[in-house]
Amino acid sequence: MLNRLKGLLDLASPTISPAAFRASMSTSSAQPEVATFASGCFWGVEHIFLKHFPPSDNKGILKTSVGYTGGKESSTNPDYRSVCGGTTGHAEAVRIEFDPTIVGYDQLVEFFYRTHDPTTPNRQGADAGTQYRSAIFTHSTEQEQIAKRVTEEVQAKHFTPNGTRIVTEIIPAGQWWDAEDYHQLYLFKNPSGYQCPTHRLHW
Image (tube, rainbow, N blue to C red; front, top):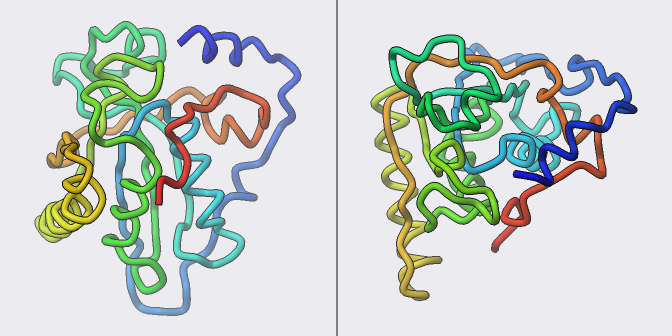
């Protein structure tokens, strides 16, 4: 947490246009879909998805945003300070719009598991608290079924052999709140900023 707060003090951040990290839909008739994931500090989660699925390379991700979800119904319009205080129950999360004709939801779920530690409840690296929990917020019954199937497959292949268990929540998506502008694309604006060490390719 202290490292993250220090990162926010960097006032020399260059201005980056979000348009540079957005893509148009393919020529297919498919509508864009939304995937929502939480796996620790949302700076690193957004960064690693965009690093491996850059919209400019037409790999399926159209755009991303970081924000807050999964909190108490009574906690509306949460901000960074209140979420970090743990009183609202929200998770730091990434909302991904994607073209399902290019990248499948199952591929995004598998990548989500590859890029954090889903075995630690309410923690990623040194970041502890419910806001850092591992969660998949599904937007349809089909997404829920796919998320559960991929979770079972990843558990059997990568975690059962090590004697560890995935604790990721799989729950229906609720109200989404965009985080403050300075959080959007944070690690692209601040390449030397704090990044949780669990946000890397684990296999």
